[in-house]
Structures are given as structure tokens and as C-alpha cells.
Length: 115
Image (cartoon, rainbow, N blue to C red; front, side, top):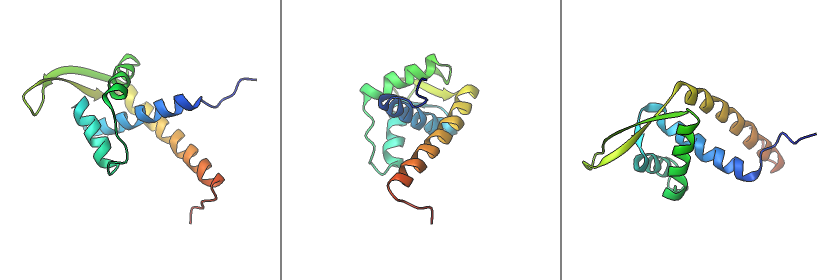
């Protein structure tokens, strides 16, 4: 019987994907802004490197979770702006649910309670 659990690498990849989708919930942004928002919101606990960010953005776009268009950044440079699609919003909801179930399960193992 196949396991229903994703490999560890898929969990980490899925986590970055979820953070990107969450960042775009308020509107479109280019890659540098997405990375900055994630870093700032996490109080600099998460450092999103370009080598991880851009492949994730392309993967999400290929899956139809993001759309993109070229525009001009706040620095007056050409930049690709990403926007969440309807399919992306649905995936964000599902991914958030999976994340909450997983972190609750890990918390139980670590002896944390919900008090």
C-alpha cells in the first residue's frame, strides 16, 4: 500500500509554494518584493534565496496557480509581476489546511498543548 505522506523535500517545496501564494493574496508583486515580504513578515527568520524563489514561481505558474505579466518595478526596472489565479487561491486554502494539520501533529509529538 503506497504511503500518503509526502517526502521531506516535497514538504519543504510545498511550504515555499504556500508562502509565495500567501504573499500574493493581496495583489501582484515581482520576485524581489515577494522575497522581501516573506523575510520581513517572518521577522527575518526565513531567508528566501533567488535560487529557490524563481524556480518556485515558474513551477507555480506552470501549474496554473499564478499568472504573470511584465511591468516596471519601483526602481524603474523591467520586472515580471506575478498574480494569484483562482486555482491558486484554492490551492492556498488546501495547503494552509495541510500545514495546520501537520504542525498540530508535530506539536502533539513535541508535547505541546493548545491551552
